[in-house]
Image (cartoon, rainbow, N blue to C red):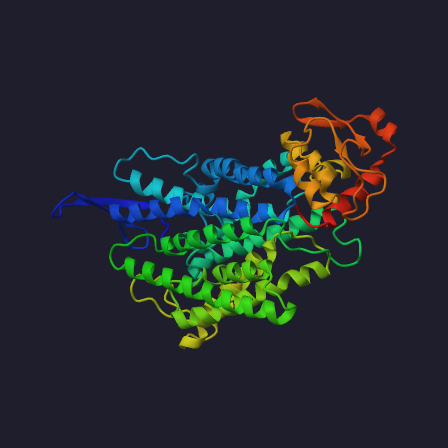
Length: 505
């Protein structure tokens, strides 16, 4: 990826429009058509936020769907403002004091030089799409049990997790770049770092209520698999821009690398999907949705580091192994009782780790734009140097209390009351459907003893608690009503566990 700031500029006449060229720090020339390519890729990458949102919303319980989508908005809003303020400068600043660890300068990104303006802003918007993706990876692993206020703070400062590795790998002064590290499209700074952050966040938050009560996880298939698969497709097409756009242009032969990146990315993901489908049936006797999704996404992550520098048949190997690795890793994570609802660590953490190691095996020398930093992988006669360099590339409560988690983040954080529907989750399917039109303001029905999918009568007959809003931002339980019904906090937690373990609506 060419990411250095403009150091000089010239204008040359061609037949047709005036064509402006910018000489970058590494000698590659960028023109207005390169900027067009970068901007177009950035816009497509931005749509990956929708893909992540749908994928995550399809996995979580329906009482938390709105909250998970809002968290994706928060990733862009608060992660974006911090990246504009100081993140971009820490990655790509070139002022005095810039060093192998971080950049200095370019705070509150702006450009008043008309000769440099286009490349400065196109470079920033492209990198912004990367950093918001790195933050969004984490939201799925922390789903259903994180306070929104805490997540806002996390999103603002998580920029710091991305910007330093981005400088190390891509900036001219970065120490890993100087050592010859190769990462075309962010397998390490975006995916590996995002996956590790997801694992740490999930471990700190502990598991959702009832998740491991029986000693092993209850059914982990998506509550809305249609949304999850639709999210996969949106991520899939966004990944093409993610990888092909990382050639940073189409002029001077870069279009060849962009075409190769897109082809290798597709072939690798196809291979991962094939292996995942076959392995899912071989191990479970069914074509499990989560296995298929994780295998395709794992292959996409794995090929990210080397997409422009390997051949399609090598992409098959990288994608197949990446798909298998990411399909089986969630089982290991569950063994340690770390609750990662969407498998973020499996896909992005393990897929990212395999992807950067695979560079040391498969990358071939790039004579076109020297994106390989003059290095070859082990299988292309490059020795162990590149293989050794690649692995070098980490006062308010965070978690909701039991009552808040029982009520669901949609209600607690956003005031969207789904209690009528949730109360009927233990009813027959017909009553479940009818409950969607029930009262929405004052009732949440949980009997003192709730049995899995046992019918306990209509919503009007069920014992209930009342919920009052103390302020637009907080909710409190009406103690008198709770005492009247005899429903304790303990029974609420048990009800939440039982409802969560039931089949999704």
